[in-house]
Length: 402
Image (cartoon, rainbow, N blue to C red; front, side, top):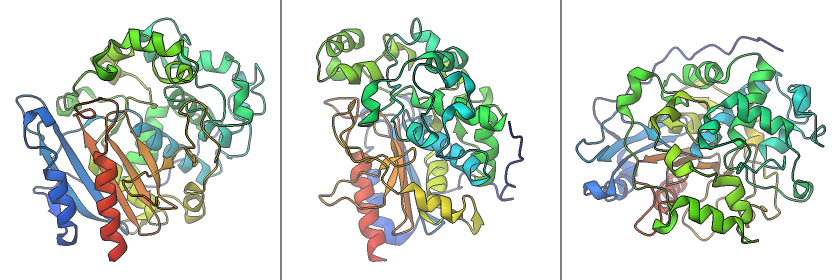
């Protein structure tokens, strides 16, 4: 195991601004954002944008709870948005030769080499081609999902789905512990420390949390409503979907029993579950993706080497994802930065989360956009909506004209 020291920090700490930042060129985007949060039923959120490595938008609005307004330092649970951050940790290690994308995972994690997983590479893991999407029944009971050691051991012992040889299958919950365990074993450093030394400190922003410091938990916005699809109890929905051939894989990958209660349990902030329990600020996410959109450099300081960043927008899979049922065009730990326009940008990449939060980078314009919210979804379903895709479309249209 390598204990190579991380790259030096930038020397600059990015603190919440005393007042909002709005580059006048992005005024239309900011107006669009403020219209999202007019009353407490709409919750609150924050939007941050970088252009060519420099911040141009940092705004917030709405309510962090029924009685408190969203503040400049409010953070929130962002679900799968954390997959992009976890992947970026791994890319930092790859920059220094600690991890090689085309080496078997088992070279770093010997216990992984069972059940036909001996040849699965890091690249395949990053692109959801490990065949380890199943979380239903992986460990006994929902509280066990908070035990990283137990979950990673179960994944190391599991047999992969044979469909992985032909197509990717979204690892909705299992992606996080797989990337965390691989990164820790390759580096010899606990994953939460890696997040701090490889992401938070180099970027000068501390709000990259899976385990949230106790002194910071008062800043976390309350998420609502419950994540039960269409108001139907989670357990009933999960069970019913698991019996339908076209939906079984979605239930197996992302709907473990009791998950709806687990996401509301404060104990999730004591755990490392990078597939879904990341707590971030929009400011932090926009800065990280701002570096990825700008050949690896932000505020004039190199965060990732350009030759590594150049690989991140390259499409690794084009076949239909057997869990999600659509081609996801997976990159190395990210999906396409989907925006609300008919023709999607070719090189945009990032990661969105259940409920609406997410962030992406567009290397063609040097733009990054991050949006976080505690209002999950819309009036129809809490699972997703078009707020970020619409904001992203507006931001891209502005950047393309500049």
